[in-house]
Length: 386
Ligand SMILES: Cc1cc2nc3c(=O)[nH]c(=O)nc-3n(C[C@H](O)[C@H](O)[C@H](O)COP(=O)(O)O)c2cc1C
Image 1: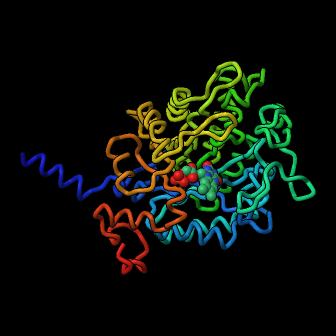
Image 2: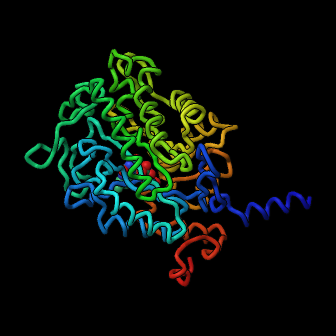
Image 3: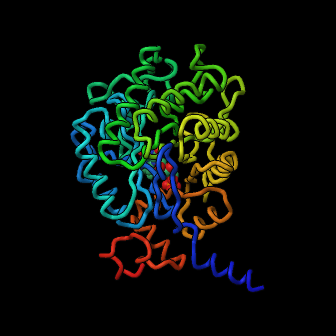
């Protein structure tokens, strides 16, 4: 049985979590991440001037996690248009003036050996809401408090407590597509290694994907081909604007956990079909699998609750080079390692656990028997004995 013993040693000494993984790009070798622990985007509501420009807080927040050993840090939902921000205190990339402060974030992450991505988003009918901070009000921020009119797939409120948006017409859809492409160009100029398009959590692109919110009767509604049309246009425009040597990612809500009025669903099977199309025909190399964000569903929250959704996408993408990351209450090193070792995903996104411990990756390495100095965690902290 020497073979079995050797395999056992390999498993113990070479955790998959700390093995490299490559996010493929259409040209060149793609982006090699030094490990498979990813920080997902997390809004900080820290833009005090409400101008979309990253602040010192963003540098400290992303910088700590880059120093903490994560292979990839994803910057929070960043508005491609001012009216696409979730709250007035969100980041943006709709203006060239925002680029230098983003470049500060990428430059520091790179000094730490981490890759850094930005999530490009448009909140649609869920824009202009209050920052999700202690004591925050609910609902749409009125103009008197710095809010703005919102847009969506239809004129129905995206959530019951929100103001009614305007339904996007053909010209409005073109503007959204162009805004994503321009923001991707700025992300490239800022030095980001990857872009993640936000098509999850009930925001604009998900408002079009889901039969709950998309009851349009034109070519952007109806069947799956219609409901995915805007997303595919956005992906193509971003892919064309974004460096062909850099990977393009996307975050999807893989299920609404409920159904539309006519029984139509947005679920793991629809998501898997879309994922395959995105990878095979639209140059997407990384899919982060989340869920929910629209009204009506009950989410079975618990450890690793979205991992089966990631597994469905991973299976749909077998025999491709695309990387699938799982997210949602993945908090323990052994749990993360098991998800990878059982092939349910190729990488893991660690959200709130990384807020609690920005050095989660360095700690996890230690737990799994990898010395911190063997990963790119900050050498200044080695003596803390991760
Ligand atoms: C403070 C905070 C802000 C978040 N902001 C975003 C965001 O900007 N974009 C996004 O796609 N998800 C956002 N999320 C969701 C996280 O990326 C993640 O999917 C979620 O927290 C579940 O993962 P976890 O259990 O590891 O925290 C946010 C979560 C938190 C806690």
